[in-house]
Image 1 (cartoon, one colour):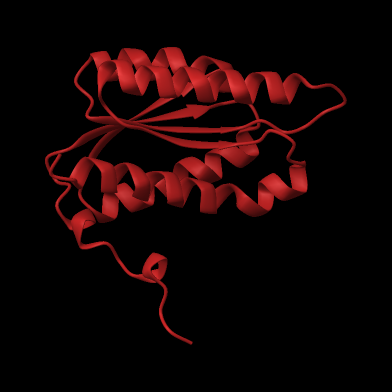
Image 2 (cartoon, one colour):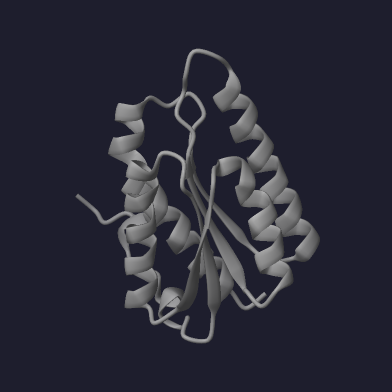
Amino acid sequence: MPEKESDKENPMLENCDNMKIAIIVSKFNEELTSQMESTSESILKSKSVNYSIIRVPGAYEIPLAAQRALRGNYDGVIALGAIVTGETAHDEVIAHSIAKALLDISLKIDRPIAFGVLGPKITWAQAKKRAKEYAKRSTETLLDLLSQPI
């Protein structure tokens, strides 16, 4: 089977040693988000990237923390959270609100925010299965964006 482009290591990810990244992690659903945090941290360490971990109570608080980090001295943000579905549409409201807020902040401040937030409409079992992969993809996406010559 031929190798897919997504399976190849991106050479741009090798030049990340001057970056400073904030990993913003929701403490809500910590069983999931701690796995996500560990995954992101492992990737950043392997690339010798400077990073800080900022923990917030829940996913709803991620945008404010991201805005503050980007207005400070961070080059980019990895937003990690897990919004698991419940009996109401609360998960949809929160997920859509923070996705829009993070996009708006990124465009306004002109720095990237990688969206590694699980949900909406995801069960606990689905979230548990996907948590590490979401963190991996969002971390690699941020590094790729920061490595681009634009």
